[in-house]
Length: 163
Image (cartoon, rainbow, N blue to C red; front, side):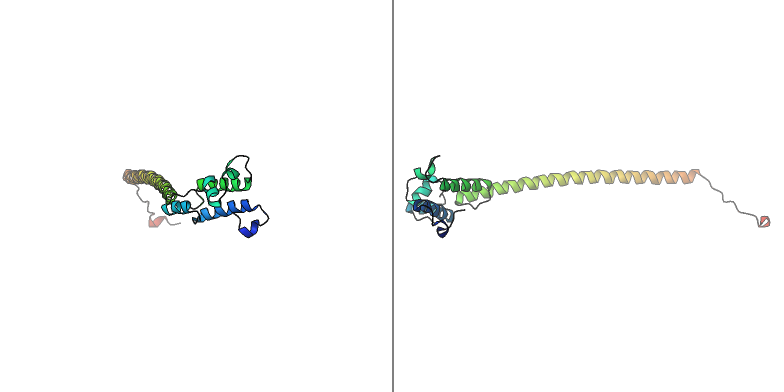
């Protein structure tokens, strides 16, 4: 995240201009008329060209590999990385819409996955319940058959044979 102006007082004034420009673009409040129009339309992107335009300096100071201000270039790279990871806030309407569509697609995929998992569990439960009812019926039938086959006659002691 860009540093505040009072935190970077020991740096080069041009570098401060670039860092302030990045902060304004991130907030969606550029001073440049053309960039303000883009921000209102929702198509403002934070890149080396727009940062240089907002800062009022040449983009070659920050856009080349061996540039004069590698710190600013690193901030731009960090912003791109954050933007691509989805952890940052969208700066344009298009980015916001795309981010929301992506999140919606992920949620729909999760819901479908959960529904499939629930269906598998439901079918497994139905199968086990059916097997359980079959086992209970078999056990009841066996118990009934064993009672019918075995005729038990109680042996009663006669009263005269008391010890």
